[in-house]
Amino acid sequence: MTTRRIGVSPQAMYQSFKGRLISGEFAAGERLRPDRFRDEYGMGATAIREVFLRLTGEQLLTTEEQRGFHMPEASFEKLEETLAYRLLLEAEGARLAFLHGDLEWEARLYAAHHKLAHIEHRMNEMAQIKPVIPVWTRIDWEFHEVLMSACPSTTLREAHRNSFERYRQQVVAILPTYGFRPETIPQHAAILKAATERDAEACRRAIEAHLTSHRDLIVERKTDPREGSGANETRRAANIETS
Amino acid sequence: MTTRRIGVSPQAMYQSFKGRLISGEFAAGERLRPDRFRDEYGMGATAIREVFLRLTGEQLLTTEEQRGFHMPEASFEKLEETLAYRLLLEAEGARLAFLHGDLEWEARLYAAHHKLAHIEHRMNEMAQIKPVIPVWTRIDWEFHEVLMSACPSTTLREAHRNSFERYRQQVVAILPTYGFRPETIPQHAAILKAATERDAEACRRAIEAHLTSHRDLIVERKTDPREGSGANETRRAANIETS
DNA sequence: CTTGAGAAAATTTTCGAAATTATGTCAATC
DNA sequence: GATTGACATAATTTCGAAAATTTTCTCAAG
Image 1 (tube, rainbow over the protein chains, first blue to last red):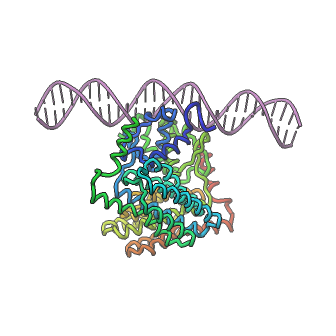
Image 2 (cartoon, chains in turn cyan, orange, red, blue):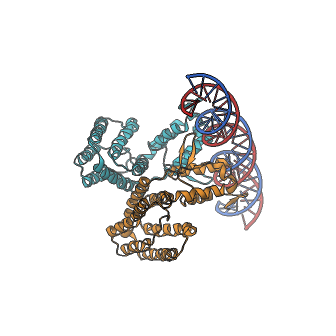
Image 3 (tube, each protein chain N blue to C red):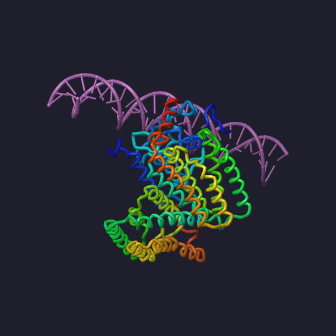
């Protein structure tokens, strides 16, 4: 039903590859050739190419005619733009969710927050957080997705999902901690509190504080360039390993 | 340079077809088979299919595995959702444009408004506006695009473009006048005035009044169902002609 | 008259090869 | 020595046909 011969379905490949695009596996600007992933997914290059085309439509890949596919360029400006974009959508979605969400929704939000707080407290005591980044990314998404889930507009929720993905793509390309800091824990709690009190403006401020706390990190790095320009070196090295 | 053999480039086909998707040529839910347009564009079905995939990523087409491509479904709910989505992005974009726009930008906005007011006054005196809808759509887009152009976030401007296209797709599928009414003229003028005064809140209200004036039309039709359910009949008939 | 199984038809998707375009190399010239 | 042009190489994109899937049609049973 889901598998064809020995390969995976295009839909599964789409989901899988999107996860890789926003988890920092590839460096910004890196060229991605479809036939490079043929064996890995057991599909023809054309089928992979079609998945890439769809990801291009979602701005998670770029393409120039006759130049192939590339990872989108990353920059502080782009990070700020996608941050503001996501903030705009998430604050509005949360506002609408506060108007429509019932007790069931509140309960699901608490459940999602509990999972998130659990893993984040664990990360806080780990020396290397890199291995848990993919699972943390998923749980972080689940929390913000539950927050939006009581918003009745599917259009807005799907746009928010895309903004989340694009923001994360910028974050993992630029920030050495992949977006996690100890401050993240009370920030998520503040969002939960604002949601409980149905205070849209407080929630907007909490989300903004949550997202913009990355800026401190950027300033720190800019004044303390011990390890080069950031996370890209690690990323590139990881790529060399796998090829 | 732009043409290959006898056909057009995929990029040109993409632009052209997107125009057709938001001009009401196809009915909501209609199935669109790539090979149907092979002769028209002088390309293989696969190349057309790839353009469709990209448009799917932009939500201007839908696809289900093994079920081909379809026009997105249209409904009053979806119209309201895309309206709210576009309003959110355009109001924010205009707000930022007010902070960054210079005199040159203001001048371009007046130029765009002049063109728009000209064609809208002409439309107001026409018996059949349908033939000028494509050119009006383009000029209407130009005005709103110039309004956004002083917003420094490319991310937001591109998201707004997509919201405009998706909103228009809903409008032409549902509203018999394709979104044009006599009230449109002073509404555009109100947006221009708010921009001149750099009043973000007034601009937001003007855009909202502009977009939501369609609702009157829906209410009118619902209480006066002289011509069936709306514009779809005309649309479907036009399709039969061409097949 | 409705329902269901099986087969035929139509459609979507995939594939490998061909055509087109970009890139890299090397020699010749200024 | 640097630049330019031609040639060879590599990569991307496109194509038509084959494979896989869904839909439609037929016909018999309840």
